[in-house]
Length: 507
View 1: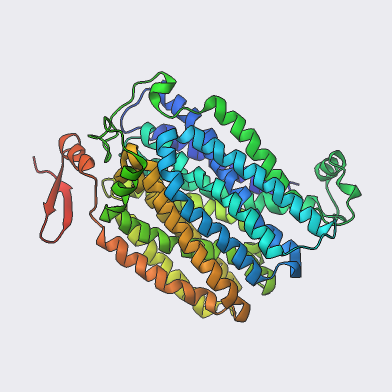
View 2 (view 1 turned 90 degrees about the vertical axis):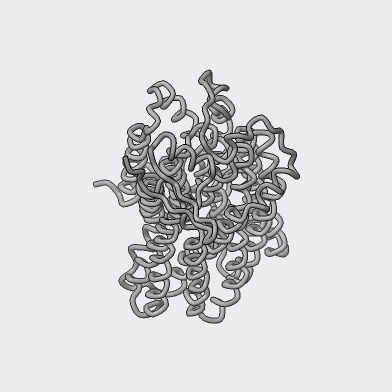
């Protein structure tokens, strides 16, 4: 009989195949099959590299539980908060830089840089656990994790930069769903595969099966004197190097580099492709756009909600017995993958097909659901572990939808091909400013009382609803012109009230 982990892996593979099939079926611009295949060979390795970057980012969460008293919740909150703050601030440099050098170079920098810093974190873990070396855990891991997150910050902007040239604005909701899928798989790799790595590298593994015995013998894991927690850093480092090598050969920044014609994607850069923006111009272009800044604030809120769930539920379930809700903790990574895929596809496809490629309407709806789930969670936090688990994975599902729409799609729409990485970087930077805020605050608050956990999130969910409502009708000018001229959709601008009304033109 197949084990639970094997069944999880098989179902994740089936989901990935289903996502790939949907990609080939979603072709509203009638691209040739040759183009669709080459574009797949472009985004798939790029996307898998980004997914495994998540494994090299959230492996610290897995290691924290293995460290025990060596790293307290407050220590972990500081370390994670420093890393996410560095990640957020890095976009002021890395966003415009990737707009200049291209997404291919950006993703290679991300993967190799993250691999090197993970090796050093693994060495530090070995020195701390096996070598009995005494050092300031917070100082050392804050520094190493900050370097890791600096290189990680190249990842998201690179994938969106490449996407901007290969996907038309009317296809980007669908790609936003793919982006959400890859992000969710990253969480699965971090928690699902991370848990497998931890179990395989235990000094006294309980009842290993034939495959596990083979792996332990090949890597001489049976000779360990204590649990090999450091492998949680070494394994993703190796995987990142492999994907970096694949990207070097497979990835192309634009269709023209792959021997196809470049095409107008009808985003904010449609009439600016001849302009050579400086890094200062790119930053000014983004920071003076009120729509992008509003989206950035929405992403700040989603950063609080996303990482408040991703960072703390695993620790909460480890400390507070979840009797009746063990399923969620035991299958945490798998549930993040499946529900994240659903959230990304619901958000992306509803954006393109129900709201004419507007990103705020589904974002508003999903934020309303998140507010309701967090409110329910605050009432049952200690009384109903099963409902708590449902609320947590529900919030994760919806927040992935919002994130794929904002950083993954709206940034490319309103930043345009010229400023995609800068706009995406600013939005993703705000995600991690929110993540840093919740990490610093909750690290201390939940040390006192876990009741503060959902209460802290509620105001941010409410604020995101208001902000999404204010941008309900926002569209780039080039997209509005495309809708009118090509798809027979009327776009009416009511300047006095500053919103747009979209409807079908009458014949």
